[in-house]
Image (cartoon, rainbow, N blue to C red; front, side, top):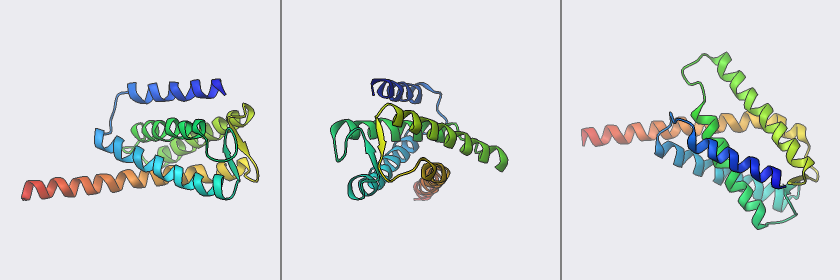
Length: 157
């Protein structure tokens, strides 16, 4: 478990230190979305349906801390390095690469008892990670669209 928390702290340090292409408001808004979305999904699949969870069953402080360390850092790294200016094939490979990384990290988390599965299967995650990454991209595009409209209104207003 200490190994996983160490990895999560390292991911957060990397997320802070990597040169940013995203604006501060994009990082804040997308991270808040990722955390809110993740916590909501986990509330149902973990707490209500007991399919999986962090460390021990039910809500616990270390599990919540893990969510606060995982979702914003992965979101920031994934979106900040996303190849928006490249063609579709590169973007698909990028999403697949992050999905493979996520599956591997989940597997390591299972081996260290940081994360547990009850009725959840790792292949469910393999199917869902690309969809989750597409949701993060769509959310960033929405934020940019809203931000651009606001800036247009300020210029015109």
